[in-house]
Image (cartoon, rainbow, N blue to C red):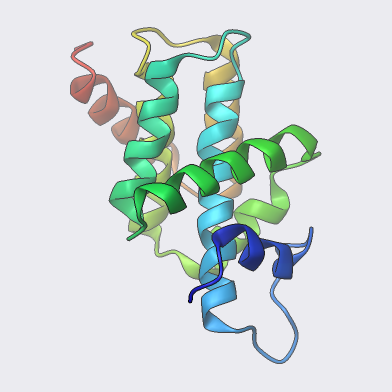
Length: 159
């Protein structure tokens, strides 16, 4: 039987840095999933009031990005939420994304972050700051950042 995502994430430990000598591909994939999920959860947590619409947007984005069951998605979300609460920077997460994602994939992560931010119908200044910081760490250009924002606004019916 497959180990749960939690067990696999526990193997990774607190560091998301690449393991020397090459990591187990499955463990590496789970670290990538966690890094992506934490970035999305960070947008959700940027506002003082946690919105169910934003939570649903995080799960929808993760479902579209990774081939996970509903149970695995819930576990990933819970772990990302817990990890996000104790994270002191974004660097360890964005380093993993920079290592494994193409530029187009990183832009899609930024777009998903915008979708989470707009899921409740408005953009909080703190959400904007989180997305801007992460976009910089992912080396997403200003034009790509704005285009992702505009697509998310359109998807949310705000344009």
